[in-house]
Image (cartoon, rainbow, N blue to C red; front, side, top):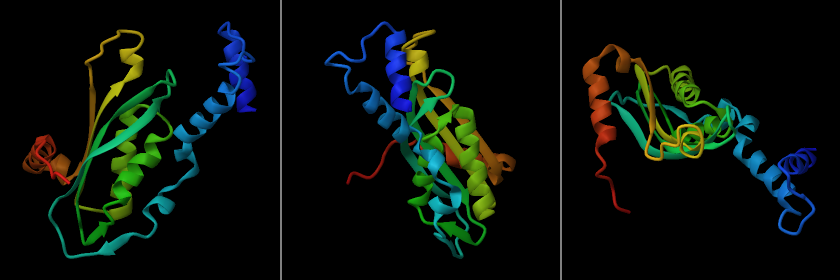
Length: 187
């Protein structure tokens, strides 16, 4: 069904979906869209997969520079960026690889950056019940780069701060300073 809709779209754009270069385009686009929106097929329980553990650790845990891509729900054009996530445990931690998987699950849906940011924060907050959660998302939106205002160097930054990150300026400042530093491990 999706393939037929894409063939019709090509026709509406003035193209011949049967010509050699476009013959398989409806199938390729349908597969790409299914992949880019595969986050709808996942849920939080499946992604976190019982990878939560009791641990006597109460300092900040940060996973930064998580690459992601998503589709803007307004234009179906990509936005691409980095996500930085932190939480302050309250006797419960999560496997570190689960945080990028959570980002991926929500980003592989039709999105707006603001919702993506809060979905990640509220989901971690609900699952872990930590003392605080912080999420910062930085992205380049192709709907701004390729059309509309056509500002190639603009970047959107959104944040969601919960618990200690909202209530304690020093905690928030520490997180912001730690994600700002670009010195990283060379592996």
